[in-house]
Image (cartoon, rainbow, N blue to C red; front, side):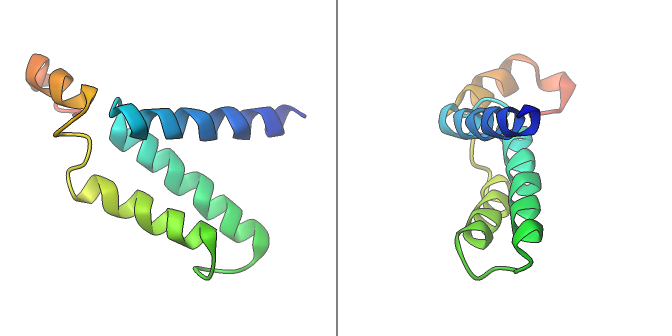
Length: 85
């Protein structure tokens, strides 16, 4: 019961962070972790929905998403010296 609620909260927080652009890279990294776990649980790689999500979570941060129209854009301008955005 505990892990089921942790997984559902994790999925919801990943979706929200990607949707609104807040902590986008952290959300995408967590999405990669979740997708890899789902794929390893089913003992198959890339054919199916989990492989598509994995590719999307890897590709989106590499393309600079979250830096144009999101909260991360504001945070990057405000706190540039931190370097996490």
